[in-house]
Length: 380
Image (cartoon, rainbow, N blue to C red; front, side, top):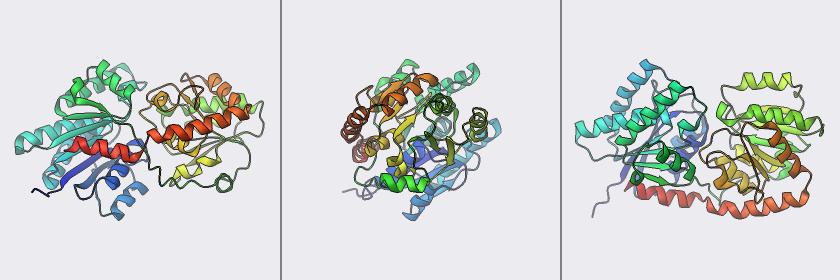
């Protein structure tokens, strides 16, 4: 009987807390420890809490200094050697790639490593929102489409976190249908650790009605449109407060927009917070105005908190929120539509209660245990 553990190496481009990082954190800590052994490789960024959590559980985290998010030819070239060296050192049975940048490089380097070392290592790639669905210049779209197709030939399996991403991969001919599988993200429904509504509001130091979101300050999150929607609403609801929990490169430009619209007292970017989901009960409405999504963890957590949701009908969002059943879906990049949807919920207590009840039922479809078991089957 062979009781050797399957060794898995997770790779991700950057450290900033987001969907891909939470995905790795949850899988690495949740996999069957009798069957799997895990190490993690991470690119640019500072040390974050999710990495500390892994190291506390004796999961080794390797820093990859040449792996960066933006296109930088020298770094991209050197990162290939860096990943190859890590594969030689660890000798994994599976490399599981997360995010487009390291996904492309890691797949090709992994394939070369397999051939040169004559190893049977499996190459898995998870699509956390296909990069081709981002608002990109033509040259970048062409670059990413080419790199996704090349890496697709090297990968043994591509996990899509939403059916939308799977269909996008098929439409763009990234890989053959047999390589693609949808496995929805899931959360630990037995360990949600939400604060009470009163305590969450006290910790946020806000007593008014709150429209909130948890999102990295990236263009794909569409936060500029939430700010503009806030301007429309604050003209009518003077005491309404908007908060965004998250960090990212657009902080300065978003703060300029807030100031330009005179929303300094109503719209706050409060930065990154550990265990940000615990504050969800403070929100009277959760609003995610994305222009591109994979399958949002924060939407699933908002379901679990029983918070009414307004979000855009992009990516996997409609797989979580059914319009006028457990939230409201609007088209992306439309501040007026966002404002009208938020106002509809603000003005209808019965609708709030219906959405809350339906959210608490819907979240049962997004269990971490289900995600873990389905993913383990891909590894063996």
